[in-house]
Length: 561
Figure 1 (cartoon, rainbow, N blue to C red):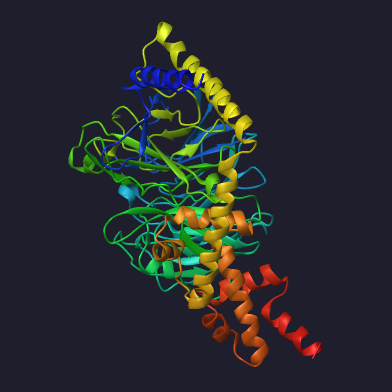
Figure 2: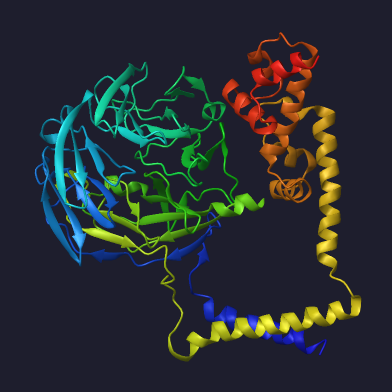
């Protein structure tokens, strides 16, 4: 038995390897990222060819609205998909390259866009779409004419609007209950399709690297809805990617956790995360793949989030498609398993790729209720004058992934082999445990994590590394000459927390010491001397750990002295 089991496992593994040698998923030799080929499926065509439109689900119906059609002429039409057929609707106004947001009350706000054909000018025009009655209502106008703007609804019910194209930018809000727009202020740096992140029930951050004239903005500052602009240290080296404007939260309502793509001077793309006032890079099992199938990948859309599966998707295509009008485009979809980060692991990646497709999508794809991705319309020959009627479904949320495995009897080989391997492995391990009386691996891992935690704590406390506002888990890993996952696993195992929370605990305690020593010291000084990147992060983290703001904590300090 001792000899037969390993030999049997080996034979079955060889059989499994022979069966799946040509199958996907596989790893690309350049980036070592698992790759899976999927067959993009063509859905019923739109009634009108369009680009520059908006795509959304409202009342469980896939809907497209606005945009421009043949000849780069704006179209005041919309259509929704029902029972396999697109049904046309008449809008009140033209909305080409406009903003659209599905409100919590179920209606859809559409506003702005180009005032003339071929993408010229801006408009104030706005209307509400009621998906239950399939009607549009032109009810009011924005206070600031704009196109290529972004919008985000806050918990308070207000909709933050910012961004513009070849026109002065500014921030305004829309009250969905009163159906009124209120202009707040101009901004010094005008952006197109900015990213808007909710940071509190009634506050938001606005940033991005898309200039209102189409060039690149390398700025590390973001605007706050309430308050002045703030500096984001991460953006000194990692810049938000030129993408479309939709950003979805990965946490529950009130969590305010987001993912979005960034890039550095070398052109390497990474995933940035915002959580509780802090910006950082998401820990991934491997770097984001930049090449595949002899293509350089251009990631050109924002991250799509499927909260149900806890996966995020980054959409891209072959970089040189701009140079080859009329030729098919190779699409790539990077799946990011972000749920693994909450368990102290790095997020694993899978790169899906499709058959070559003729359409170039110029508007954000969206997640379907089933967890797949759908894109509608786009450009033929990479030209705004020849938009497309095609609608494509990318089955990333189903089990129908394409492989090159044979059919027939071989289809049963993989599951049977895996079942036999599992049974034999269980018997082998059970027999070994019956001799030893205990499971050695978990115990050894616990001892390893205890020793590693001791080394981490000693290093951090002796060098006071927590006072470095730019401290990263990789800094600790490099010093201790281990992989960053080892650091994260040890902290999660021994402290039940993340690396960021572990370091912030030190920072809060240091801030308390500074305040006790000199209660009159400015809080901005306390923040910087305690290792926080900015005051906003300091205030939120302090309250998170103590249940009180720094000022409230100081008041209690005076009260009990």
